[in-house]
Image (tube, rainbow over all chains, first blue to last red):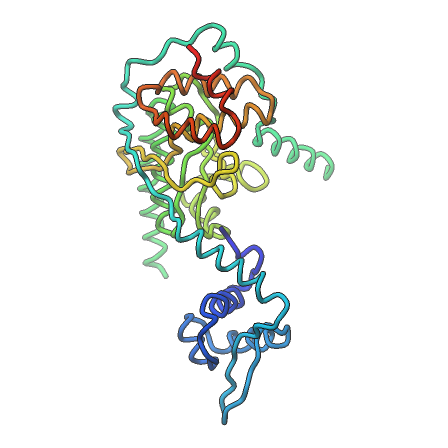
Length: 148
Length: 199
């Protein structure tokens, strides 16, 4: 399930995902994080600062280095991290194929069932649910007309 | 730069030949083989494709039911790649965002949004159709029957229920009855399923 629609910045998405899923890891420096997530240090640093301003991260300075860590008291911490946990769970349940068909065998199968007149009539009924393609073509035509 | 553009040209020419060959087959064969080509292309970008809806009904009923759309659900981060993959194969967007058509084929490809679910159940196990162009994932027959039953009830449409009946009649020797009955029970459609299964 795509989260990129919700969080369009890939850098931000990666950083949020990292802190949510690795919440037990200690404070991390920007270069270390950039290397870990395959990000450029400059945009990563910018996003870390933004997330700190937002309240999601806390930072502390040790010597020359600023290290960032998760702020578990941040009000959106739980619901936000639940989204990433769900994302992980969904990707862990990767689709599996458990049965196989051969297309050649299926299309050359001669034993097609006889369709009764009653069933045929029901099968050829008009759709009650509009075909989404027709719906979209209709909207497109309307749009073109209104522009003209 | 030159090298990669000539590589793209060669790839495009290869795809064109492949699609021309597919377009000569019968309709169900065209749909499934084209879906297999798309599945392989999307797999290169980390997305997996599953055939659902009318095209799956057409496959399981040996064209007893025929559709003009091939519905394929993509799993993965597909925001950027749908356009890239489809245009590289010569498809054009036929509508605002999710339909694509190709001059060689008389049907459209539609990408309904994920997840793949029937009723309240998310689906992770599928069947696979082996084609000359590689495998393509498809809804299991049992899930497809339940999908049609659910649609029939939701849209108060005899047509979907008739598709469920045709699916049952065409595949009854090959169906996991226990799974199907449990699914219908969970969704509260046992009576409808019994009606569908009635000779």
